[in-house]
Image 1 (cartoon, rainbow, N blue to C red):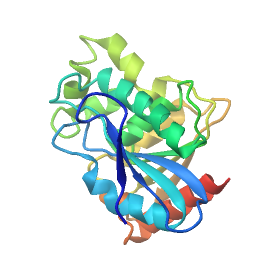
Image 2: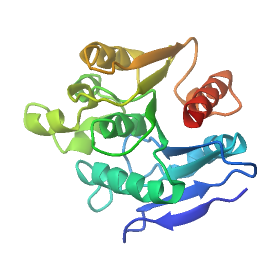
Image 3: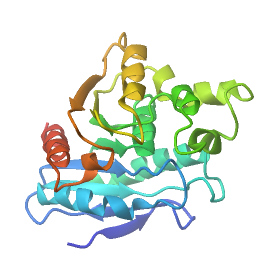
Image 4: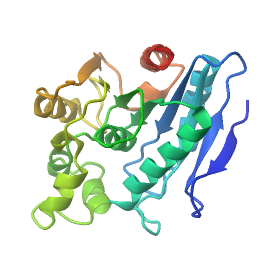
Length: 237
C-alpha cells in the first residue's frame, strides 16, 4: 500500500500523503504528526499508523507542514499550513474528516477545533495542549519558545493566540493520553481539561494506563490499537 502525494502550496513541505483503503471506504481522517514543531521530524514516522487506519477502511491524509527551522515555520505559519492543508485534503476526501493529531500535532488539531473549518471531530493524542504550562516544564529543551519565538513574558499575546486551552470550540474533542508519558506529561492535558470544562461541547479524556508517548501511534501496541478503534468508530459516524 503506497500513498499518493498531493501538494496544497508551493513549498516542499506543503503536501499531504493520501492513504487509500483497499476495501470500501468507511470514513475519513486527517493525521497531523508531532515532533515539537521542529523541521527534523517529518510525517514519515506516522506512516504505519496511517496505513493501519486505511486497512480499517478509513481514507487518511497524512499532513505535512512547514516547521521550526524552515522558512515561515513556527507560529503562525505552521498553523496556517495546517488550516490550508486540511481544507485541501477535504476536497479529496469529500467530507469533514476526523482530525487526529499527536504531540505537537495534537496541539495543532485542538487549535483547529476553534476555527471555522468543516471537521467531524478531533482526536488529540498526548497533545501539547497548554503552551504556558509546557513552557514552564521546558518541554524538549525550549520547544515552545522555538515555536512561538519568545517567552510568555515577552510575547504574551502570541501565547494567547496559539494556545488551545484559551480557545473555546463547538467541535467534539477526545483527548487520549498515556499515564507514563514522559515527553508530554499528562498533567498538561489535565490542565487543558480544567480550562475547557465549561465549553458548550466539553472535551472528553481517555487516560491509558501505563502507556508511553509513542505508544499511542504504534499500531502494534495495545494503546495504539485502542486509538485506531476510536478513530475508526468516529470516522464511521
